[in-house]
Length: 133
Image (cartoon, rainbow, N blue to C red):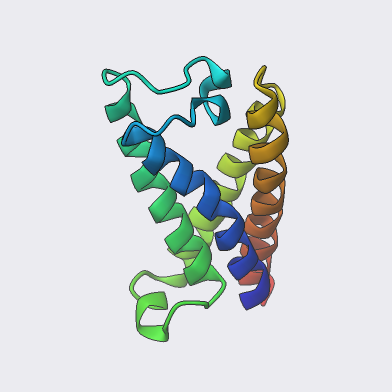
């Protein structure tokens, strides 16, 4: 299911880009951590490295489950492992989406929130299709 996987990856890119920008010190803090910081303090920036790696892995599983990537990349792991991780990241995105809508930062809530909704739906659709398709 190429279309939901591609849409999910595209709507996930702003979150990935935001985390990279925040880790590098961009003044976009109003879109993360409840808008507590305009610029993330240097001591907190390393904490954004793990989510960046996790988001790349999550996007890889989405694109693999949706068969968007070339076949050689889609067959690196057994299909059942890809399906399990795609469902795991669908759950992760659902909880992430919920936390965004409880944010006290309007920009985080109303910019990142809707993107997370679309991304979570695309993860669920792609994971489900990977099982039944």
